[in-house]
Length: 183
Image (cartoon, rainbow, N blue to C red; front, side, top):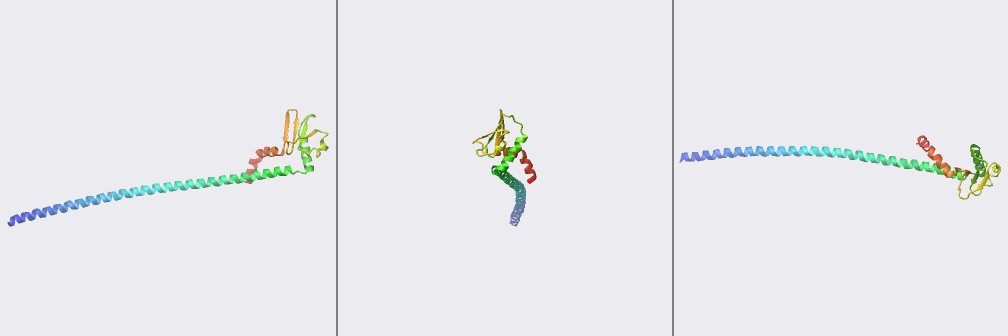
């Protein structure tokens, strides 16, 4: 039986060797699969991190751009407020003209304008007496609807020198120049 035992032992040894080979091959394949999966996971991780960095950079740019726009808008609001205040101050000062200055203002403008002998100078209530000295040159009437300045009505032509309208018209013409100089 010794041959039988030897044969059995050999079969068992061959089976162990074959099992060890199969196990070694399986371990190598398992290790290759794990290595491959780890490499794939690392590649995905790198791509995800790169994408996250790009998105973060884009978000940063958007936030900076948005902040710059807000600052620019705030500056524009402040500039506009300053201009509003300046022109309102001009209007207030014109409304507060003393009688002598008002008379001089009207006289100077009347010298520059060309109007007929039928023209009428409309002035705010209470200003007719101030202009008595020029009443020989043009007919003067008080107009309660006129808040400031004066108007000349000459047939179909109306020269409107109401201070609010006058300042608003000048503002349209000089505002860009003022912004250029001040800001």
